[in-house]
Image (cartoon, rainbow, N blue to C red):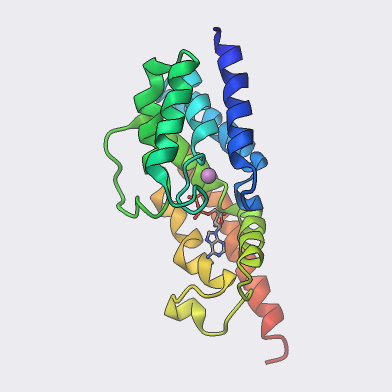
Length: 208
Ligand code: ADP
Ligand code: NI
């Protein structure tokens, strides 16, 4: 089986696995992350490009919020998939990325020495900020039926509303970038978040 066939089969596997996800974790998130990861890797030459593609494609297939809480089961399925499609050579690297990419487990600043993870994680984080990040946040908040804003949250960090999520997570991502290229893109997208918040508060507190 050649690399192109392996990519197509992985795309198909991911599409099957994303069915029923909220739209913050939809196929187009995967497409964007893959492009960002390739771009970062082309600039920094940190990992094998094919492995970056496969890891980016698979990075959300075992998200605990969506995999019926049974991550071990999902890892096994991904392992079987990679084995059966002739990708056992990159299997362990890819699974390591899937296990560690998510924001919740990696509040710690420094990742273990894994350039493939740096690349995919930066790409995933970049898709949570900028205009797309704002759109995804409100989409997720709507999905969870959260209020858009709860006055006072910006200082208390309670994270009930979607604006609260900006302080809990989105505004922190710029400083969590692993790569120089990721950090450069993040700076631009971070500014969009700041501008958005400024405009949002201006409208919310209009006249006061
Ligand atoms: P990751 O991509 O690291 O797995 P999550 O699964 O936590 O991140 O989030 C997916 C998307 O949903 C991101 O764009 C994130 O900002 C958004 N999101 C997650 N939690 C919330 C929340 N409580 N309120 C608003 N948006 C959220
Ligand atoms: Ni993701």
